[in-house]
Length: 57
Image (cartoon, rainbow, N blue to C red; front, side, top):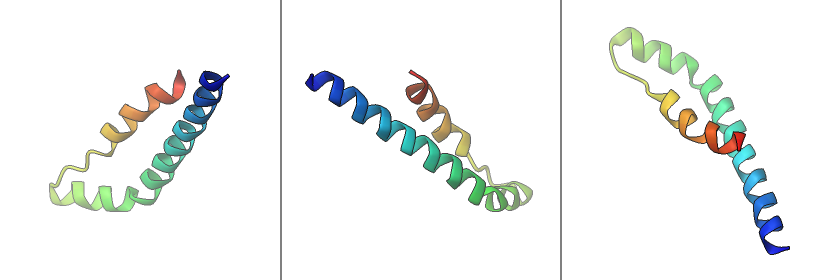
């Protein structure tokens, strides 16, 4: 039973983290566009790429 509760909690935390990263990406989109226009890389996709596979399990 503890493993089921841990898996439920892990699933909820990963979902919340995934959603928070999506919102952060939307909010930081103007900053990323401006940074890219100036020539500064903005690697937000790496953070999302690490959380997405864990969330989809």
